[in-house]
Length: 584
Image (cartoon, rainbow, N blue to C red; front, top):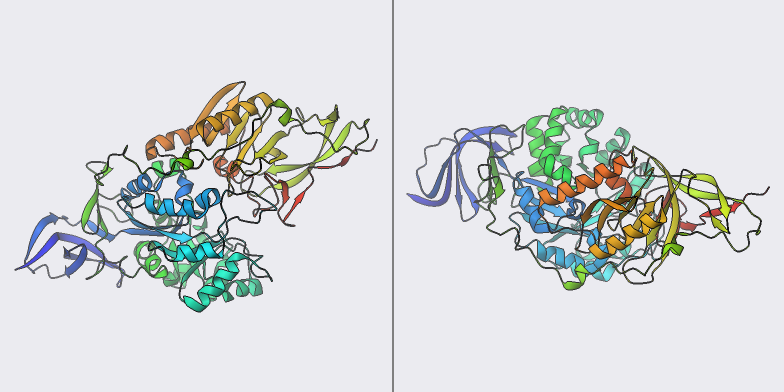
């Protein structure tokens, strides 16, 4: 009688090759699947036997395009959380950490994932900074030499999303272009992830010609069609679960060329709804065939990332799997990694064997990353240019108008009173916004104003501010704004709201100003309180946390604010806040 580590009897096993369930006994030997016995007649001597009692057995889910930092959690507790959702492999692209600490930040994220119960792989950040030092100050820079260094790390499996997608298809001297030339010569089959919303026709062809053949961004049906017909792998996140897109994939049997991903999942959503399992559930509810949905959450993502040792229940593959009662409701009863149980619904917690308080310790400077100059109330005044006539009583000002259904802003010209040669902005329907360089490099302060669907009153401040993660504050009272800035300095990072001299809500993010070491529950509840506070202060966005955090993203149209000032995104240049005086 042969000996195996684990024997699972009477399971409805998902066969990825046939895309259907088959009743079988499954044996595991040394962390890998050994034999899938459809006849259920093979006797094995097993260290452990589990009767699945006709439960459904699926491969562990694999998410190949996501960012751990979007959860504001460190890798180990994040991995613990995902284990309970049946996700056993992820590929994270840590460009947020890289913007704060460069290569050191990425290497620390890799180290911090070693004790997670799931496999955490990484992509090489390819756009750090997202633009250049003229438009933003970052704590770290990833150049071609750094990318080559990261290529040698064993847990690095791809090039992360290339975000400067319009610049790269023109003549340029970008560091990522140098790296792509190197890969073409030395590693021609290496996986390269893209980010190319709206590119079509010849522009899309130029992007693909560079070897960038994956995309996860939001698209029209025509954009989806052009990507797939030109050989681009299409990664479907939640906002792309559009009926016409899902129908196009199903009608044309295009399952081999796509998979499901999460991209960004904030902690409160992670805690309340789930991660990749939630996206798959919603796809099935929207009409995507169940077996194909499971296929596109297990097999095809692994094929895309050349992770050929997993994503399927078959002999010799890594024994990552979950057992559940309903494959359309991805709430596992048990989750196994390498043939070992890492989650049980009965215990409602991962079985990683780690005390949740015994977390990975980052270097000391990672906990002291908010280095800003001392501010006083004078810093919250905006003088008009020296060449304005002393008698000028009004000025035309550029304002960022926030919209409720997107992170893109638009430019709005507003006439503001001038008093004592400063803008008298209070009472104009606009809130003062400032970005304070916090990496200890230059102490820059960029000034702007917001209006529209954002805050109507009170103050919000954050160091979680894409992608450069400088300190952003916006409010209607300088005293509250100063209080918020000083509190973030005290916390060494986070997100908070203030009104009338009182802190209404806060989430501390002490690791590089962007991550919490608390549990998913504690982080989620604090983040939810901030979200609700923002809404109570008038923020009307479908995702106010994301909207707030992208007001400084200088690759997202049309007007954004960094420590260098207002950025005209289309022109890729700093523009004047004050346009002109009003001529009587």
